[in-house]
Image (cartoon, rainbow, N blue to C red):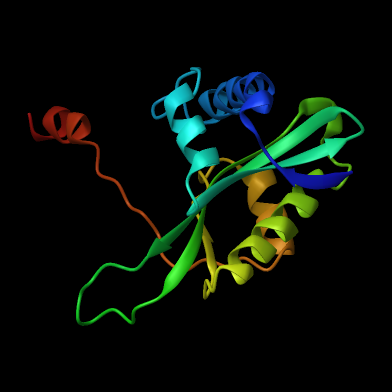
Length: 161
């Protein structure tokens, strides 16, 4: 398996993998994610712009997975140390190719992509129920930086009564 940048010719396969990703995430977090296609315009923009890429894990002519990465900057608050960083929006490996090193290969490519662009670090978010992805990310050097906490207001209304 090797990694290359996606072109618009790869979009049908990227769309298929996005449907798989969204179905998997909807099964894990149905209150947050629903099975859906990714917006074609967003994918085309990600390929076209210099601050983002879709990196493909390919084996021969077959696309086995992808990582969508963007270059970002920390917010302009005086208390925050300013950095340029890479944000990994999505990573998915096709079901039959899982466990064969595609995720590690894509993460290595994301790190190299970020380093080439002067990023200080790579950041991502992972759902709390996605333990398989968490294990991969931790094995590949990612550690917790911050937690997102949520208070569902629909629960407050029923408890307050």
